[in-house]
Image (cartoon, rainbow, N blue to C red; front, side, top):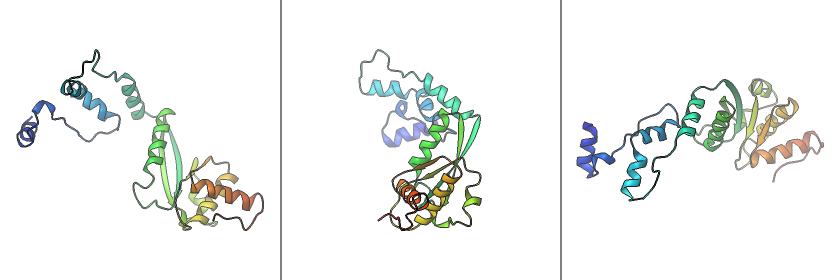
Length: 188
């Protein structure tokens, strides 16, 4: 309360409108915390909205939060990309995987591998434990052969594969080279 009073004094924001936004173990905890602090009602009051039911029904959200914290299964997905050294480069893909995992009651473990590091000699070792392969988008020619090699391994070992943008182009090139025997197939 002392901190809220201090913030109110220095910002000229009424203390009732100062809300704690603490670190949370789950993304799903954040809206629940806000509702516990009455944020939904405060917004309705502040904007003078006449609402018969201003407080949101968060039952479904609570169920999802509980489910996300009690996942029964574990699924390993390998993401082969060009920008894996950048922490947030594929965040939309990894977040989508996590949310899909909640639906299927599975904790998704995403292993990111630099496409340039994949060769015919090490692909089996790198992908031996994966349950799915994703090759997302990218630009330029760097790492293309590593992508193609990993896609070939997935195809030959019945590993589910998702190619996004450049990843799908490389899947087409891999198929053209190794199934249709068009050795010069490439992406321009």
